[in-house]
Amino acid sequence: MIGPIMMDVSGLTLTTQEKQQLIKSSIGGVILFGRNFESIEQVTLLIKGIRQVNKNLLITVDHEGGRVQRFQTGFTHLPAMAKLGASYDKNPDMAMDKAFSCGFVLAYELLDIGVDFSFAPVLDVNYDTSQVIGDRAFHSNPDVIVKLAGSLINGMHKAGMKCVGKHFPGHGFVTADSHLDLPIDDRPMSDLSQDMKPFKGLINHGLDALMPTHVVYTQVDDKPAGFSSKWIKDILQNQLKFKGVIFSDDLSMQGAHFIKDITNRVKASLDIGCDMVLICNHPELVAQIIDKDWDMNEKLQSMQGFYKFKSDKINHQQHLATIRDLL
Image (cartoon, rainbow, N blue to C red; front, side, top):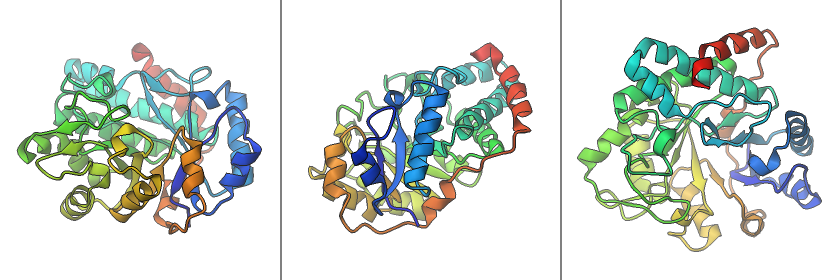
């Protein structure tokens, strides 16, 4: 059983306070950022240190490629997913192979240092209206996204890593950034169904987990999707039959300030079906909720990484060669 709170840490090594927090039963995971990375050797030691404190913690990172890749030096600089989309427009079969290889390389390099999974892939549709999504999205065509993301997920699975699709039901249309504001999407469900296609298409084809977005879709509910039982319970779980893990987006983001108090934010997210909630960059918020009585979650154990044998180094080099022209 794993606690439902994912926190971050402040630097290149653990502080005494962080060590004390990581042994709390409510803490089930750690998300790493660029500030936690100096070199492969350093971050490997940091991860080992985290596991020495609590071996059951899930360790993750936003490692999508392009402009969202926290670890740089010593890691393959993966392309923005839009490059795979552009490749698909020229040669679909070759692009599918490249997507698989990107997924394998992404997963292999993170698993090799002890990271369980990345919050990837982005399944948003690119409408050329959202700067925060933009080239993080594979394509403007939902059917192409299903194909490319499906291949990337297959590559991740081949290396031994689970995937997290984001941002359900779709963040690609709104111009506002939910890190800084509460975006509003006034489109009818008939339009939103296009944004949902990638999620719907992958739910029965390898989508292990997903992350709902802090966007209000006014024609469905007046609450952001990540706090909405209509979106999570009625649509995602009941209609789309999603049985996997659900991670909240960061509850410290402005889009989550729909609910003012952090304790109530956590409770609301868990009550509507999130299995784990993220609280990032605000240790004072973690301190407010860490000692409260939150239910443990057995489902989260499925997200632990499967560390492959050293023979995969050969496959790693082969997949690197496949994507060389995109790097």
